[in-house]
Image (cartoon, rainbow, N blue to C red; front, side, top):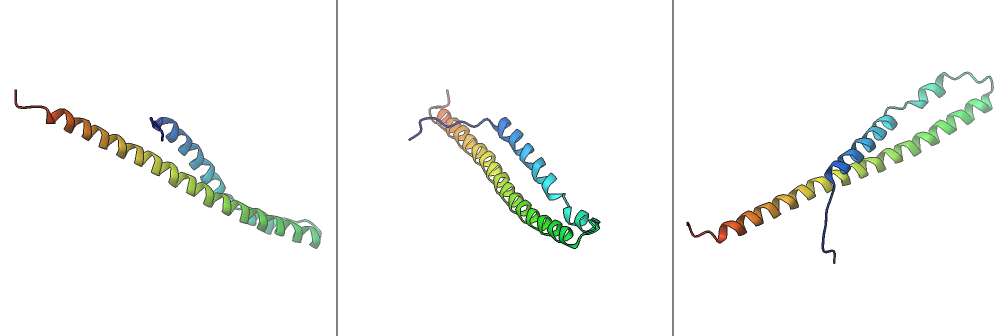
Length: 103
């Protein structure tokens, strides 16, 4: 069992910001439009291009879903850490106040 637990919330927020930026960038890519307007001069090349774009879109969609899951876990880590900190603060305050006899 761990004897100590600590989280650098600033570092978590930095990572969350970076992951969020990557997720935003991936979510904004619209490669299908480029494939639809591409002039290749060859039906085989056009077909291959469309298959590539479809496959990469599926992979990008999966990656966005994974990044969303990472963001949710980072948010939960921050929220849980703050909750534990507040419970500890309240416990210490209650403990300190329990010994007061109204001096």
